[in-house]
Every structure is written in C-alpha cells, then in structure tokens.
Length: 356
Image (cartoon, rainbow, N blue to C red; front, side, top):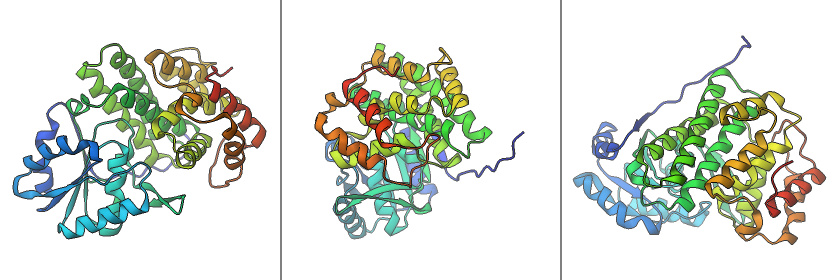
C-alpha cells in the first residue's frame, strides 16, 4: 500500500428524519446557554420554530446571511451576536447561512451547530471565503469547524428542486476533486467513490419523485461523504478556480455554476488523470472511458442547469473569465491551467454542449 496520512476531524453528525428534535440536547451538551440562529431573510419563518424549540437557550435570530458572505454582512452578524451575548451559533439553511455563521465564529470563537437544508457541504469544513473590496479572501480556521451537524431530510422539503438538484452537483464536484487531489489517500477515495454513487442515485430519485424522503436522506448522506473529502485530501483544481471566477466575479449562483462546469472541468483533466476518470465513471455506474459525458448526462436527466448562458452570463464575458482562470498559481490541477484550452472549455459550457 502507498504510504498516506489520515487526520480525523472532531465533531458529531446526526442523520435521519426527526434529528432536529435533538437540537436542544446538542446545544446543552456544548455547555451553551445563549444560541443565535443564523439564516437568510427567506428562512425566518422556519427558523422562528427552531428558535422557539430551544426555549430559554434561544438568544434570537440573525437573518443577515448573503451570497458569497460580504464582509459587511459578516461584520453586522458579529455585532448582532455580541449584542445578544451569544455563546453558540446555529446555522440553518444552505451554504450562505453556514458561511455566515462561520464568518461570525471566525472572530467570536464560539461553537457552531449546522443544520443543512441543501447538499453544498460547507458545514463540514473549516474554510470560508469572505468578499472584501470586490475580492474573495479565503479563510481557514478551526474556529469555523462546526461542532455538531444535524442532517434531517424532512427539513429539505420546502427547499425547491431548482435549488436542491444543483446543490447536488456542487456536492459531486467535491468528490471529483478528491479523485484529482495529489494527496488522495484510501480514506478520501473511499468517501469520494461512495459519496458520488449515493448522490447520483438520490438525485435521480428526487427528480422523479420530489417527495421521496428516503432519497433526500440519501442525498444528505452523500453530501456529507463528498464534502468530508475536503478535510481528507487537500487541493483546489480548475473546477474551483472557474467557479470562483464565475460566481464571485460575475454574480452567478454558486451551486448552479458548479453543476454546469463539472462535466467540462472533468473533461479538461481526462487525459491527465485516467485513474481518476475510471473511478468517477465506476461510481456513476457507466462507461469507464466517459466520466465527463456521464456527469453531463446525469445533470441533463434530472433537469439541472447545463449551460452558462442559461445562468445569465453574456458570451462576451468568456474571454475575461479565461484570462483570470489562467493567471492564479494558488490552484493546482493534474493538467496545467492554460488560457486557450480553458477558453475552449468555457465555450462548450456556455453553449451547453456535451463534453466530447
């Protein structure tokens, strides 16, 4: 066996319908007595019920979560948490709510309980980007690692499929990245393969029967597996670079961009990472020579977005995206990130063409 290093991550993960009923017990187990629930403005009605379930442990609601976590929102959240005397944060919702709680905890150093209602996976990591002066600044700190994760599929029922299905594509991007990581190890590959297999099947079942609670439970399990690979095998590849440019720089929705770009970024690495391509295809249960096409076919089948033009990106923005994608050494990739091949990739992604 090839030598490897594995570092386990602390924390608890609770899975299953009704898991939300254990929230108060989990907050008490953290020895906390003033919990602030963090969410986006659209989630206040659901969060009011959660806050009420905490009884005297509730210190209020902070609904300041915003896409990409602007520094202004983070600072406002920090002030609100201080004013409430918070000693615990409960993040309820998707990646925006989780990222908001992380940004608050980064400065206040208080524990996070995350209750995801999408499949983004942000809740599993100690990483968070904060946008300041128009630039995305990546932060890493153990303060942002959630102490407790509560995965209750019933809480996803009021999340539209138009949000949930692309968040599954975002989740699968984590698994693809784990297969491409230079420091991949048996544990990370185990999580990535199982996570991708479970997520693909769950997305198909959800698209066919949106009320299928078992499918939603499986998707949450797959999301946890896929996102956990971010702690097991470090590295960010061309997929992340392109999505950060398109999302942060052009205001496109994060999960939708990940879903559109994943087949194309995978195709970019096809020849450079044949073992990874075979593993991805095996997890998807199809042709081992066509992992990129299989991803595209999956997203098309479930009705997820497959073209940048449908997300509102003008075609004349592609040159600038290609320029920026090829000029940042922070991102690693099995194949060198070069401007002209990236520009060709973007043209296919903009048009919604199946990777060849």
